[in-house]
Length: 143
Ligand code: UDP
Ligand code: MG
Image 1 (cartoon, rainbow, N blue to C red):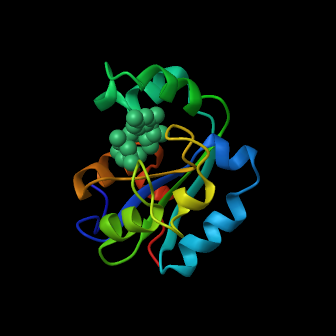
Image 2 (tube, rainbow, N blue to C red):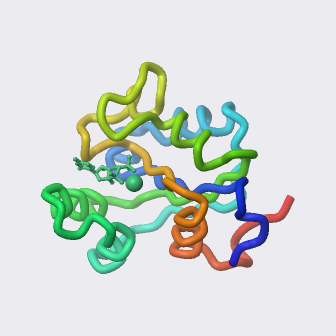
Image 3 (tube, rainbow, N blue to C red):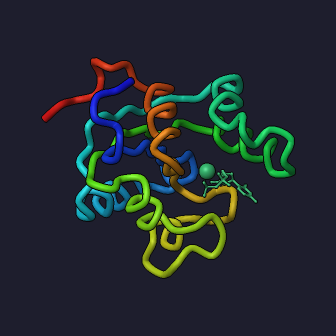
C-alpha cells in the first residue's frame, strides 16, 4: 500500500483526445491552480490488455468496446495528485460523466461522453489500486 493514500491522493489520466487536441497544458494548469500537487506523472501508451484491465469493472456494458478502443487510440498521461479530500475534490473539478457542470474540465474539453478528456478515481480504495496500476512506490514523490 502506498504511503498516506488514505484520504489525500487520487489517480488521474489525461485521455488520448485531450492530448491529440493540445489540451494538456490548460488541463494541468487547472489541476495545479486548484490546489492539487503532482506527486507522480508519466506519458504512456496503454495496450489493449492493460486498458481492459483498467476498465474491467465496465466489461459487458454497452460502451465498453468503444471505451477501450478510444483509450488505446493514443497515449495517456497518468498522474497521482495529492490534496486533502483529493478523490471528491478532483471529481468535482473534472465534472460528472454526463452533463458536466460549467467550468469543469470535462465541460471545457470533452467532445463526447466517451471522449471526455480526463479520468479521476471514484474512491480512496480505487485511487490506491489505480495508482499502483501505473506507478511503482519509488516513482511517487514525498515532498
Ligand atoms: N463512458 C462512455 N459511455 C457511458 C459512460 C462512460 O463512453 O455511457 C466512458 C467515459 O469515457 C467514462 C468511462 O467510460 O469516463 C468510465 O465510465 P464511468 O462510468 O466510470 O465514468 P467516470 O467515472 O469516468 O465519470
Ligand atoms: Mg469511473
